[in-house]
Image (cartoon, rainbow, N blue to C red):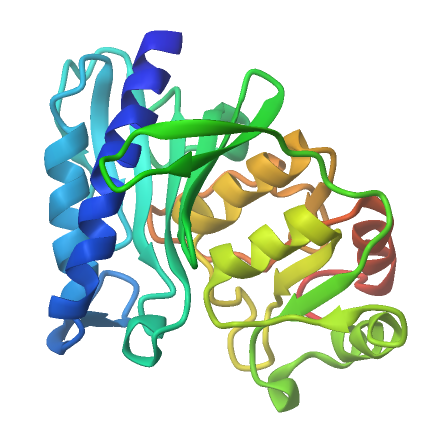
Length: 287
């Protein structure tokens, strides 16, 4: 298992400089939508194709799935092995405005769709002022600096601070359920707002400073916006491994078991106490 996971994240790190360097040439909007109904940028499809090429030949990786593809692609021996699920370019709408974006990776030990409990590793690359990669596996989270050649420098372990500092929540405020809006009004008395439109950049702020990030179920969309398989479950695995907590409003996201590849779920990750307060404020994740 270790060799397969090493190979996956080595391939992701190796591709990261190429993804970053290619963003200026792939800023245009396509006429197509992805399987989740979102408008695609050229960058979304280009990053997906690149990361598929880098991971599909890794021995032990038998399935590849991404937010940009309708279905799982079988790339190895379907009798066993691992599934790699990616959001190739999280926050791709930020490319046009030159704000941070990233790549999210989940490695599952069974075919997709799969529950959060089947994750064996998860990570993300953040294309910010520097390119960094965070990897959770074997009960630890580590951060790496990714060079222009794809080489990585270990920056050390990542542990969520006990004292929360920042918060960020998606969705239009008028579309928030009343119980969630009431919770946010309490949170904003003590924490600083940090929300940039790229999930992984906002989650990284929570990892660095402590606090909470979330995208709730909305009045118009009770399941929220984030995809369980590609976004919510991998970031929950990272945050929980770093000493934090996650929730869909009723349970840990790692207890969520999607039945559809592109299923969405309300998503909250952060400091234990804040997530506990959130769960207490939301009797269920539809109100």
